[in-house]
Each structure stands twice: as structure tokens, then as C-alpha cells.
Image (cartoon, rainbow, N blue to C red; front, top):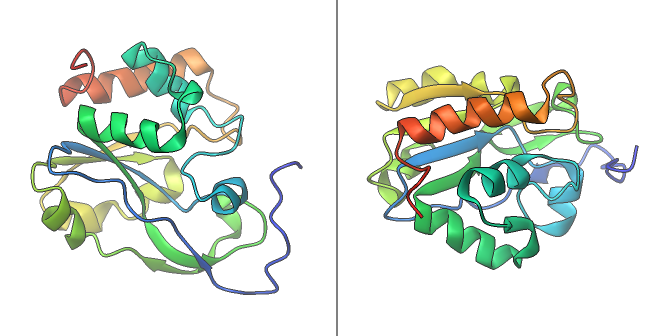
Length: 176
């Protein structure tokens, strides 16, 4: 598989910093960055991950053509945050099923850095395992179909419809 991580030798992997802003209204939470994302230091860097294509379709802007920093600025401008459920873990490869020794991120940080955020949307099932922690902080919690290439059972169109409904619900579609 092209997205196989180098053998970690059991080493601890650290996630990426959150993409948040004062205007963030909805935060998408993945589980933990895949090997391609960790290597690149960028969220959703695997070329077959549908995160950037879905947002591009919803916002009618080619995010993939933009430099990464410009993509992040566009997310912040539109009120969308991105982070992961796990701050660190051990994992061989990129599959969620191989995550062990996971440490949760400090979700209270969402309240401090994104005070307008009212909801989180879990990008897939592994992320959604942390649902109760976010509900305890008063967030509305949504579960979206994973944009990962491993989620081949959902077509792009079906994922797009689910993501559109979530972003529309929080005023993030048609806001640009």
C-alpha cells in the first residue's frame, strides 16, 4: 500500500496542531493523521483522501490547487476547524484499527481557542468513539462518513451529501 508508514518500531507518534480560529463554528475531528499526513505535516495529505475534494465541491473553490497554508486560511475564514481525537498513539501504517496506546487531545482547548464553536463532526467511526467527551463539554456531536480511502463503501456523492447536510446545518455552506 502506498500510504504505509515506515515501521515505527513501537515509537510514539504525535499528531498535528489544531486548525482553529476565533470564527470557528464547527470542528471536524479525525482520529489521528495517517502516515502521509504525518510525513507531510498536513491534514488529509493522502492523495485519495476525499476531505479536500468534498470541501472544494461544497465551497466551489479548488482547495487542492492552493498551497496548504492557504487552504488552512480558507477553513478558518469559513468557520471550519480541524483537529484529531488523539494527540498521540502507536500505530503501524495508517489504519485506525492499528491504533494502540492512544492519548486523547485536550478538548477543553476547543472552548479556549474556538469560543464560537458549537459542534464537532467526527470524520469516521474511530473518531466518534470520543463522542461522550465532547458531549460532556456541551458540544453538539455529529458523525460523518470517513473521507479516508479505506471507506470505499460510501461513494463520493453519498459522502458529499452527508457532509453538505452537516455544514449547511452550521451555516458553513454558502458563506463564502
